[in-house]
View 1: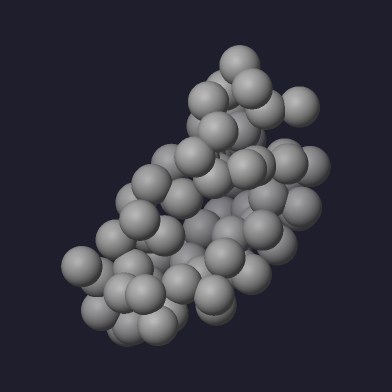
View 2: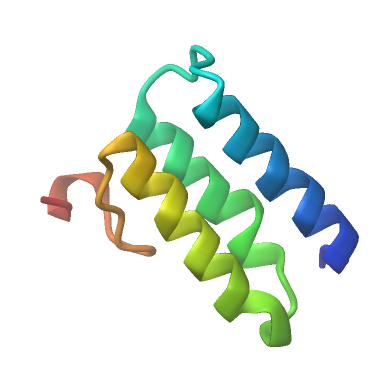
Length: 75
């Protein structure tokens, strides 16, 4: 389980990479990895905030991600 500070650090790092135009590779894989490494390890009471920020990162990258969907099932 991640602490709120660790979640904030990881989300801020991801947002800075995206805003800074860093080479993140495949945007869909990047966003999927964030869901796995942050959302799935976040305490329940922090997940709604994590969802909002992960969806915003996806929008910045033009990625529509449905958590839990397989790559083949995503639009």
